[in-house]
Length: 395
Image (cartoon, rainbow, N blue to C red):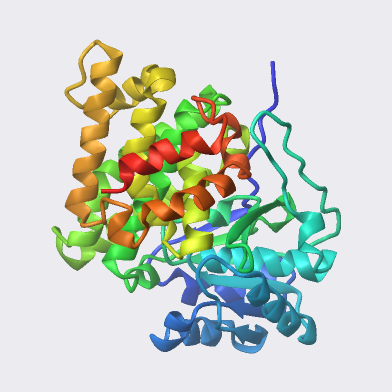
């Protein structure tokens, strides 16, 4: 017995140049006429933001092009003021996870006010998470992702408090984007390193969902399929082994995997990898993709005493040379993941991204306040558990 929370995305528009072809029509279909665009300085510089503005035409009600990594509170407030001063009935996010979080955060602040402390999730190991209810209606959001973060499919919002260096979580189902555009031409402009790293981020999400204490048949269907697509398709999507057409096709297929990876996450949960990457990002500016790839093999080995059966199922589903013994199959999967990270050229140690042992205590303390660890297969009981993992990932 139980309940399934179905994906809340109403429409996915997919194909090369789909934004140019369908964005105005989709707005009309949803009764929207004045859309505000939120994006990053890099997408302003390379002209992608201007392309979207032109596609909007008369429906373009303004833009904010100052999104920065890990979504600091002050940036959310600046963007919310810009939106409040415009006459808008929709928000459009163009970019990766930080822009998506910014747009969700703006929708939250415009509707609920700016008391971040009263709205954020609170958690400590062994306690029940406290998740405030955010009841006000929200501006509808349309998303044009340029990475594989998949945050456009979740109700979660990550916003960093720059004073403490901690990334706080917020949740509201009403901020899940109604429409998502999978445009492989727009995504072809994303640098290979960023694309590959965010692909490893959602691969780690799939693995964490499968071994989560809340895993189930429904979420497994999505997570196993996504993991297969990612492990097979990531190298071709960045190395251009099949030419430009093959690269575009690979990127569009991986956008499908992104949908599968997180659209049903409310029925399962993530784990220690997600919690660590949140705090490596908030306090130290490490990208979520790089952080996930660096710590994933080490978290898997730490989790193995409690999760080897789940990891072995993944190894066999990927048709690795997995033995009947779950422990051996788990190690085979971890070696395969390590090989994929090396093949993609992603940094393999914390030291390589500027994290040292002196940083561990602060990171670990913040991780233990992150609700992502609540259903990790091996319980995270204290900061010492987190430090144990970080030490193995240092060099």
